[in-house]
Image 1: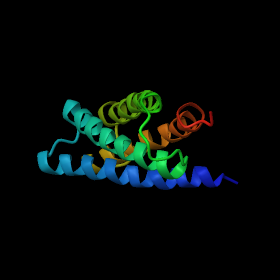
Image 2 (image 1 turned 180 degrees about the horizontal axis):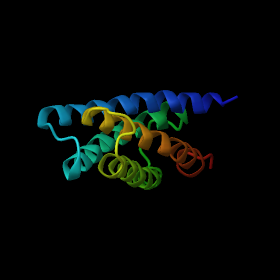
Image 3 (image 1 turned 90 degrees about the vertical axis):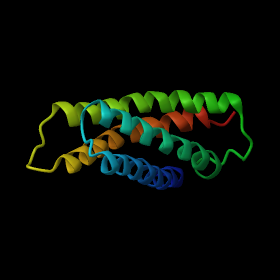
Image 4 (image 1 turned 120 degrees about the vertical axis):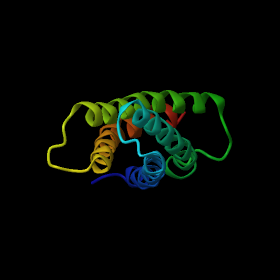
Length: 138
């Protein structure tokens, strides 16, 4: 059975996913761009917004590490997040740009399915990185 901490992490993750997908879809809707370098840029922007949200809620609620800002902790958080960022944007971009949709779906749906796959791929990496590297007990 998953730990309560992991369940809290997943709840924060759902919120982060909402931020990520909300911004990604807003940018695609406003521009009509659903692939190529434009999509990769939009995914980078949306993921960055979600990571900012993630630091705040994971620090204060999931791992309960207080309210104060700690430079070393934040640097570690950014390091784990950048690794996840690279994996997330790469997986989503590779899927949307180089893999044909399995079924006949619209470019918008395929872009979103690619983003979901990238999110699933990076969830465990983030949790264990945050738990054992960033917010570990000292």
